[in-house]
Each structure stands twice: as structure tokens, then as C-alpha cells.
Amino acid sequence: MKKILLVATGGTIASKKTESGLTPQISPEELVSFIPDLKDICEVATVQVLNLDSSNMEPKHWSMMVECIRENYDKYDGFVIAHGTDTMAYTAAGLSYMIQNSRKPIVITGSQKPINMDITDAKTNLLDSFIYAADDKSQDVVVVFDGKVIAGTRAKKFRSKSYNAFESIDFPVLAMIQDGQIMRYIPMMPHEEEVAFYTELNSNIFLLKLIPGFQPEMLTYIFSHYDAVIVESFGVGGIPKSISETFYGLCRQYPEKTIIMATQVAHEGSDMTVYEVGHEMKTMCNFLESYDMTLESVIAKTMWMLANNHVNKDNQEDIFYKNINYDVIFGKNRKC
Image: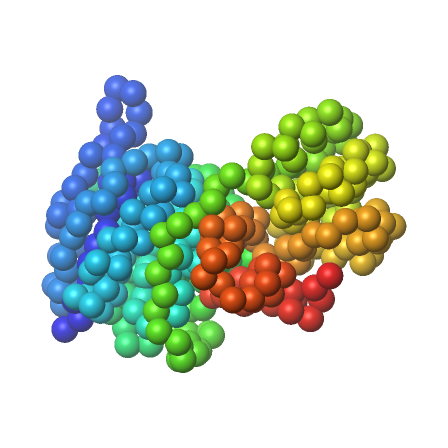
């Protein structure tokens, strides 16, 4: 029987009602006690790494999870992380870059209702997660939620209250779980390299969300204080003429800064070759383009990439466009 470690981090799934609202208070041992069927699936051990509302989750907490998994990697056959839903997609993306080539599954799950409520999605999500983690064909970082198995770099929270809160963005779900059965759609490709753990991140990045009428005065501060600027642009991407002169001037002034163009549109990604505002940028500054990556993955990959330049042999462009846990499909063939 497989041995699975439950890594508890708090979140709604482990919360109880208080006068101040829901607060994480349920221990990992209590979580397991709500699912008696687990005894027929795997042996479960538990550890409490964090006890947070996931709105308080930070990159340093991702490193704590990675350290926990690294310390226990040889002792267990898989891992289930109980996590809040608000930042689950960020954590799933972050861990996808911080734990690479894992032959053992690292499953992240949570719920929209606490597990101790009469009506809750927590029990099903947690049971499904252990079913997936105990299966021989499972590997890498995934989100299991509402019967879907989503690659860690493709998950996004689309609904704030409904049980079907998460979607896989521009990539098929890896599998579905129904009545205890796993129906796989994407076959797992065996890893040729050994598992690699990374705990260092550089979170000194700025996400610049463009809005109509955005004024350029803030750009000087942003470029001078941050190591990377991710521009969440309109549509397929571009820099509006109202800020282009200042923006391109700062790109020339700070050539060491990492500039990444992303899009505010959830599906189908960026393509800076379509419009004049995109073509102009290609001639005016060096930048990376998110293409079909989720914004959560762009942010997490940038943090990982900036902090680990010393261990990555490739240049920044090759690192960013390298496919890790299904994060980017079009970048290799369409890179700037």
C-alpha cells in the first residue's frame, strides 16, 4: 500500500467559524478523520507546515513546502497539500518550477466549504487527491479539484464560491476522477532527469496592469526599484502610445531589467506580431512574451528564473520558453 504524506497549510478546507469569520483551526489529523475510506487507499501520515488563510500565502511559504517535501521525498510515494483556494493557482505554479522532474505526485487541493460543514466539497476533493496521489501513473505537481486533475502551471481560479472553481487554461485537464476511478486524457511522460528542488525565489517583480488612461509618471519608480516588470497588456499585447516614449526610454536606461509582456485575457494568450503597438515594441526593446502561459505561471516562473540564473546553464530566453510541466506550448516556435 502506498504511503502518502498530507501537508497541511490551512485554508478554507481546515477552517472553522469564528466571530471574525472563517479561520484555519482544523489539524491535519482531523482532516484525515473525516474520510474513513482513506484506510483502503493508502497509508497516510500528516504534517502541519503552515496554518494560513491563503490570502496570506507568500513565496517564502512555497519554499517551506518545498523543504518539507524534499526532506520527506524518499520516505513517501506521494504528497497531498491541503491549501486555500484564493492563491492555490500561484502555489501550484510556484511548486511546478521549484520541484521539477518529480516521478512522485504532488497534489494540491482545497475546498470552497470547510470540511466540518454538513454540505461541503472538501471530503470529495481530499479523497480524490489521495486516490490520484496513490496511483502508479501519477507524477509532478497538479491541482485536484471538483473531479479535475489540472497541471500545476495551467490552473486558474475562475469562480469565487462555486464548487467548480478551477479551470485548466488553454490545455486539456490531465484526468478526471469520478466514483473513485481515474480517467486519464494526457499520458504521463517518464522523466529522464532526476528530481530537482529549488528553494530560492526573487519576488522583486512588479505586475503592471494597463488601464485606459494610465499615466507614465509611475514607470520611472517601477523600473528603478524592481528587477523585472511584467506588463499585463490589452488583448494580444502592446504598449499604448500614451506611455510608449517613457517606457522605451526606461528600457534603454535599464537594459539589465527583465521585461515580460503578458495579457489580461485569460484564454489564447499574447501575440505581439498582430498589431502595430506590438510590432513597434519588438523594434524598441528586448522583452519576453508570455504567449499561452497563465499569469500565475508567468509570475512564478519569473521569480524562479531570476533567483536561479547561477544554476541554469541556458540564457534567460531559453529558460523562460522551456516547457516545464506543460506551462508553455507556443513559446519555443514563436519566441521573439
